[in-house]
Image (cartoon, rainbow, N blue to C red):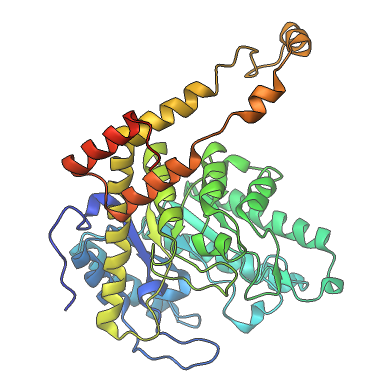
Length: 412
C-alpha cells in the first residue's frame, strides 16, 4: 500500500490535482512489448486517487464507455462512475474524445480525406461532449493525434486546415446551442503517432485559434512532453498562452528531449525547467486544474502506479514551495533588483508609439560601447537558483554566510 506521507507536501483536494483514467490506468504496453498490468476499473481509480489527495479525474469518452457499448450498458457504466465520484468527493473538470485509437481514424478525424469519416468524428465528439457535460466537466480538450500525414502529396495542407477549422467551428456552435459553456482546449504535438501532425506546437494552435468563428471559446492545453520532445522550452510556451489569455488547461508530465513521447512522472527529468514552470503557474494566478498526463514506468506493478501518482503531486508541491523560497530569498531578490536597476528606465516611452516619442527616439544618442561592455550576472543568478532547488539554501546560517559574500562582492 502506497503510504501518503503527512507533511507540507501532502496532496490535498484544494491543490486541484487531476489525473486521466488513461494515465494511472495505463497498462504498460508499448510498440515493442505486451501489457504488463491488469486493467483497473474506473470507479476503483476514482477511489484510489481520492485516497491519495487528488481533486479529480478526467477522461476520454472510451476510457469510461467502450466504443461499441449499447445504450443500456452505457447508462449502467455512467451511473456507477457517478456514484464513485460522489462517494469519494471527486470532480471531472475536463473531458475529451478519443479520435485516434479506432482504425477508422487511420488518416485523421477532422482532417481525414473521407468526408464521412470527418462527419463521424464530429458526431463522436458531440456525444463525448454530452457525456462530459453530464459529468460536470467545464473544459473539453481536443488532441488531434491522427490529424496529420506521412505523405505530403496525399492531401493539400490548406484543405486539411480548412476541414480542421470547420470541425472546430461546428463544435463551437453545438456547444453554444446546448448551453454547455465548455471551454475548448486544443492540444498540440509535433509528431507521433503520425509522421507529422498539423498545428505542431502551442504557438501554431494560438495562431489557428484566431482564424476560428468563435475564438473566445477556444484556448490551448499544452503538454510538457509534446513541446520538449521537439526541443522547445515549455515554460516559454506557457508564458505565451497565459499572455494570450488562452491557458484553459495544462498537461503536466516530463520528457527527455528528442525522444518519443514518454509521458514521464512530473519532474522526473527536468527539475529546473519544471521549477520555472511551477513558479510561472503560481505567480500568474492560474486557477485551472493541474492535470498529470503521464504514466508509470513499464517496470511497475499496481503499487508502483500509485507511487507514481503520488510522486507527481508531491513534486509539484515541493517545487511550489521552492518558488515561494525563490520569491523570499534575500540574495536572489537583491540580485534581481540590481539587474533591473542596471537596465534603466523607459525614458523614451517605448510602451506606446506617438509621433513625438518617435522623433525623440530618432534624435537620441546611445553610448553603444558602454552598453555593450556591461555584463549581466546571470551565471551567479542561475547558480543561486540551482542551489535553492537543490536545497542548500534557506537555513539561517547559510543565508547569513551568503549575504556576507554578496556584500563583500564575492562570486558564488
